[in-house]
Length: 225
Image 1 (spheres, rainbow, N blue to C red):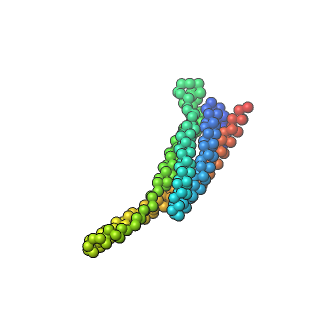
Image 2: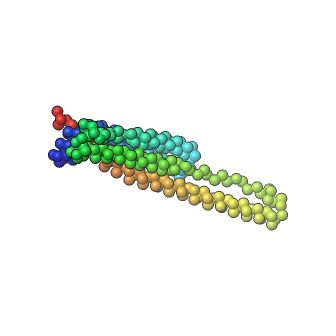
Image 3: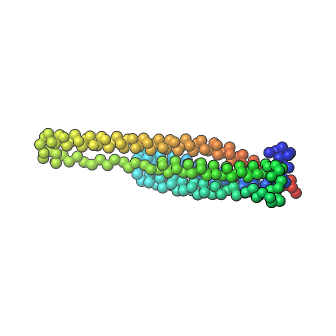
């Protein structure tokens, strides 16, 4: 975009200022998203630690805090979807006549790019929200009740043995199901953690690129004076 011809197109186009405002809204949204990622990463680590220790009071508190952070991500997804508000002027208008001849095609391309970026960002935010929600659905610990020895001893020995065997089999099956559920929960935490780490690095790069683009357009607009 720093080619002299590109600068001239941007400077002369009537929608460059609107595109610059779109960039500002995207920069603000991604700045909030960076903070939201950092916060969510800390909260999911706390939820995971509480779940490993099976501290039910801390689990409830950690899950509540993580769900609040997830709700903030949902709101941010809705906000960024509306960040790109610029629309190309309709054909036949004074500002669109040059664009139809290809003189100001770059501003129109930027306008479309801002809309595509806003829509894609909203989908990414929603996807992260879904992962976070799934990680907070945790299995309840298995309640182990006392074995009723009196009832068993009052029956014939073979009946008592069958009942005890069935009780142990049911308990073992329940413990196996709980083990699988706990492993599935920990796997979801792993997936969320990897996703957050990957997004942190990519978001930082995108954020800096948006800031540079915003500064460039401001310099172009200031050259009109």
